Image (cartoon, rainbow, N blue to C red; front, side, top):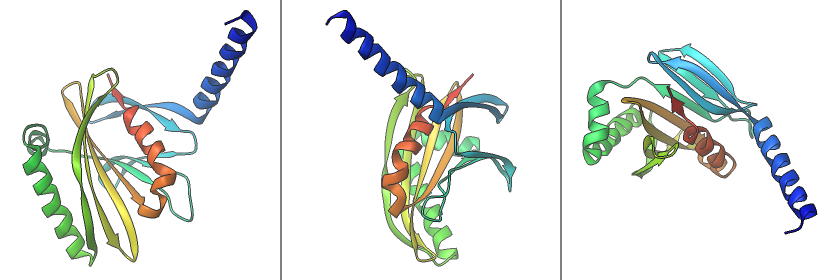
Length: 182
């Protein structure tokens, strides 16, 4: 590769990096007495301590709706269940979601299986599962992400209209995969 092509390639990568960096900002905060950070798209908002939820991330309006990610408090019993017995954790999750739907006259469509993976150079373990349901004449995908970081488990929960999944899935994945703790 000649010198001119190398310069062009470096310029293209620099522009891509700058454009990507401009679209997100590293957001730092303390949740559960633990310092955390993640890459938040610039058009998203952070809402702190609302109705028992320590942190809520709200995306911009898209077709009259917004995606939401919640940091949900987790008790030690639930944490142990997720980490030690994923089958029972998923069964417990299903029972809870079905009871919630019944209370509000919603309808279950299907449950998403558990998938586990690592982020941040294999230092952060993520267990993900979810539920598709109909509520108030709209179909939703609710996903739970149990993120294990430095001996602390964080529960992140996303809620998106099914018809908006194609628009938001990559943003949600990038955001949850960028999660870090100190």
